[in-house]
Image (cartoon, rainbow, N blue to C red):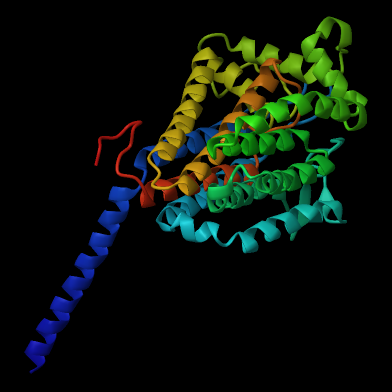
Length: 405
């Protein structure tokens, strides 16, 4: 009797182990391993860059102000990356169709957190900055707008999907514009114009993907000069106007203070030439907040043109992979989510790199996955989890990198 019972226990345990291994194998087989590989590579690169900054202990040659980095910065970056990647691996197995339906939970929560920046908890990210986009909670700082991006992408995708039968109905278009205007308006009130532009890019990309009618596109084209006039004359401050005009005509509008950061970043970027000065022990050019908004200039001077090109290619591969997942999605909802994440990563990368090389105004925007900042890293890596969920739960083929299934 005891022997038979023992054999039954062994067989039951064997079946349990086989079932566990079967679930693990099924998970790994359906996981977007290529996108995860790209994400791991760029996150590891970010931590290495911040470690290099700490080791080099860069100091401004003019003000002798330290970059204010220490060992906790790259460790926090590594922790945020691991946390975000862990979330992505878990989120991949979640059904995005079920999660998107919970918009009434996560969207008000993220809007509420963003509204806290207007209270006594709100603070600026940098001393002297004209935005108020951060909140201080329990001894650490958080930028709620970074997580509002994810809530907006999910909720707006669900909105577009649920109304696809009447999408171009004027009342529905009005509701969609109100949906988009809420996060854009909130971050504009914070003074975070860079993030507002990213939200606008996400909105435009998703509404195009959902099939907005040409009559509305033409109408927006007619009204856009009026919107630009109102923003220019009634919203933008003189300092913001001068930043834009300095890009268009630097000889007429730029001052030494206006382009100080941009000029230093271009000097640093070019000083690396083809191969760079190396990550450790070089004669580096100081650039204010080079660990954050201007980290691309540090890539240029340490790793040169080759390093910059490699980073751009890696960001491009991530964006292409996300677009590929939108094509293989089983339903419009997954497509809209992928398009929203693509617009987020692509627009923010273009704005940041353009800012560093002097093609776009300095508007305080991070380089996704690379710039220092736990909120930025968590938002970028978590967005990859949304895309991997679409890959995991949908289509029959992958037009970008894999064979047909």
